[in-house]
Length: 300
Image (cartoon, rainbow, N blue to C red):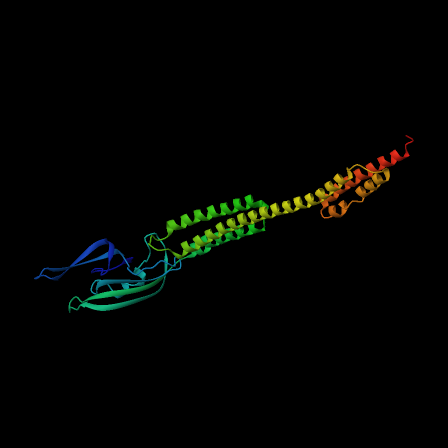
């Protein structure tokens, strides 16, 4: 904070320096009372500054300075002579200012006053509102769009999500380098952390969905295997019954006809894959039936 003063700064001052030369006035020659008048630049520390809502933080800055009416006019100290900024170079928009003059050392020849200036300043947040936040929000929209991918494309979903997460992490580190160094969490840091957690939850959701799909595929394979096992077991039992010693040729023909008319097609109809197996079994039965007919027609 820069101010023009001719006396002293009544505040917690971090740095204090003189601008230009110093004007010395003799107030009382007998008592050797002198007055030094100069321009000073001071950095004042405020104990009640809170940047938790950065970059939309509002500050009420107060400064007190002694002023010699004989050396500096009241119009020389005020809004035009105060430049408010943080140590990192952030700019502020001054909303309003209040000045109050108090008698400090009333003297008929050289009256002194104390100037108390209160300034309400709002940080200029255009850099974050127009650059950082829209960019990160757009990256999050792109990250959510990976939900349109199939769960079989888990690798591509995870690759896109992790790349976006790393980009947001680099933006977070860049933003932290411009944030004030305080001992509490700033609102912008909390927002960036929440968006990073959302990306990790999207990645976890894709992994759980892929795991659930794998379990569903395993259950489908078990059901198909059970369907295959039941008709094949029934057909095997019928073949064992057919392999018993025949009593007569008619009984053999009857057994061959029973094999052809076995309930295998009814069981096979339960699944498309078993219908092909049923066609093979039916074909073998018909061939065998033709062999029996050729034996009957043989003269031997």
